[in-house]
Image (cartoon, rainbow, N blue to C red; front, side):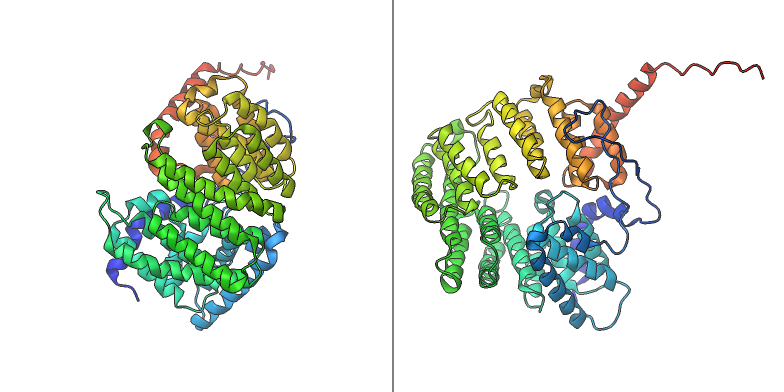
Amino acid sequence: MPSVYRYVILWFSFAACLVASSHLFAGQEATEPMTINSLPRGATPASPSVPANTGTPKAMPLDVDALAARLPKRLHIYQTVRDEAIQAYAKRQPVPSPEDAKMRELLSLFAYLITYDDCYGESLYQIGALDAWDGLHHKIDYPLTSTFIGIRRTHADLHALTDRAVQMESDDFSQFFATDYPWQLKLRAAEAGLYDLVDHSVDKQANPNEKCFEAIPRFTEEWGKDYQKAIEAKWSHSMLYDYGASMLYRAKPNMDVLNRVIAEIDRAFNEADSTNPVKLELDAAYFIEAAWNARGGDFAPKVPNVAWPLMADRLDKADAILEPLYDRFPGEIGTCLEMMTVELGQAQGRKRMELWYQRAVQIDPTDPRPYHSKMWYLQPRWYGSTDDILEFSKDCVAAGKTAPLIELEVATAISDVAHLDPSVYDDPKVWPLVQLVYCEYLQQFPTARSIRTRFARQAYAANRLAIAAEQLAILGKLWDRDVISEQEHASMMPKLAQSNAARATAIPPAAPPPDSGQ
């Protein structure tokens, strides 16, 4: 059982998140608007109103099975992980507890997030974190509950932790690895724990953190062992690519860790399925991440001259893998996605980017990632313009009719433009388009609190204060703190209040009813 000191560390590192989401459990007490305003798909909203239903306040238990039923492609994976996890919990906690329902919900959510992530923006990590915290508070299955809290932690949360807290968290994850919970849960935990360690492997003065470095090999080996089980379980190529590419991306800041991760990927495929094309896709992804590691994240004028040849060499190596791989296996979307990133660095021309974009869309027209990659390529900071983005937005809106997540790429791209050029919102064509895609998405997914919070934040940035105020009012205390922090929310409120007051004084009072003579 953990020490009191560890409980204190966990509380202060995670309290803000838990307070942020605490009203999700206020089933009988929370009151949020339930009206759904009609907005036909494809119609431009005439007012800032959008569907006001953020979902019923969280009740116990959440119907995670119903969430998974919306996504039948990987449903069998979700069901297998859920059942095995709940069975493992029952063996570990044979004495009935009032917390069992929450723990079963947590495990179902864990299985769902492993299978689908929070793909519709419904703040499911926050809900699971509250279950985990309740279990932690009641001393129920500490390795499980503390591990989920660590997985849910955001990048901002992580930076607020001390190195000592991260080291203790890695010890908690190690306890979880020793349990009989399914390997799929451990795969996700190893990825999250390794990311935390990489983030804290050097301190703010760029000095090595030896304790974090010491834990990295253990986490890399655990991840590789569990990833091999995913290969042996015949996970789809798409899912194997997703998990491998995500781990390489997380390891990118540290070349030593990146090298360890690709070594584990190659070992896992060589032992389980050496002819799988995903192995070569991920070998190429390794060179691409290494290329961007060499370049760094600064704008081109600030990149050191010595970085460019190293980046070019690594991108050439990725290119040499991917071009012939597509000829052999033209149905692998990961190959196309990685080639779009290669082109971003090699800058051979838009025609080449379009070639790989079209190939990716032909493989899976419902996947938002090719649209995201093209939108990023078209950013003014790269090789396009705002006009290019607005033109391509027509394709995204059309594709959103059958794949709603694609439509949201429009709002994301314009937000990226506005980060460097806030005046983009002065263009009369821009905000109606942003508003349209959010309204259409929320019409279909009114419980998407994270997306609604993004809508409010972007409306505020665009100085559409009435819309921002309306969306935050709909959310009440249920806004997503990963999108708008508590501090940012507090800073927004005075300006929104002033705007509301100004509008109220500008509206003339209603005329009294005519005298009826009575």
